[in-house]
Image (cartoon, rainbow, N blue to C red):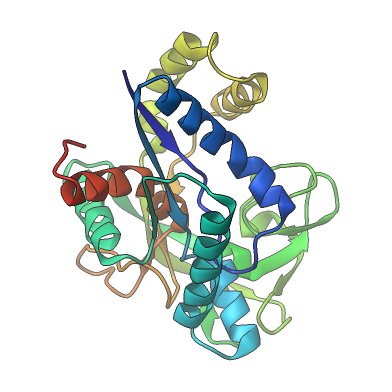
Length: 273
């Protein structure tokens, strides 16, 4: 039997703590268990080196995002090696092979009509003179009234749009942003709603209850098309004409890493991914 295990990618904007290890250790236990049974296991992971938290950390320290990601990726590698984690490959999302694979996949999706252009309203900081990605915005959650970032409330788990926040502030300078229109690229997630409902029904016996409940919640609310482009300086370049100045949204970048790392491992080891 061939078994694939994808370990969650730790975010390269701060040191690991015991919670990270507690969350990642079960994957290593499972990998060792199946190897001991004589099964073929491919166990991959890496450092998530893109996204706004890294850019925010770099701004605070007045250094480049690359310096931040190098520091924490090397620290992660050292920790996992010392702890004896048995990854078959541990890489990073700013690896050149991964970047090219992500760009190729986005091009395929775009050419097949699964990525489209849409004009949206987005927050713009006049003081910083830039459009703000969701995590560059902070405000009050409209549901639970706690402080939340622009993509999700960590208190009540509500998925948010930055425009829904009350008392919005730019996390860079603290000023109140204004609303402007801008074009972004969106993935047609809604097109897969029925297909995912079928997949959920087929998976009920094997998934944990929290995975089932969260999936049901998103499906019941109705899947919304999701932006894949962001106005950032750090990340993978969008490979579509007219959007070269934008970066790939980290949600699609990091998740594709499980596939791209598998392909990289196969190439390095003369195997079929």
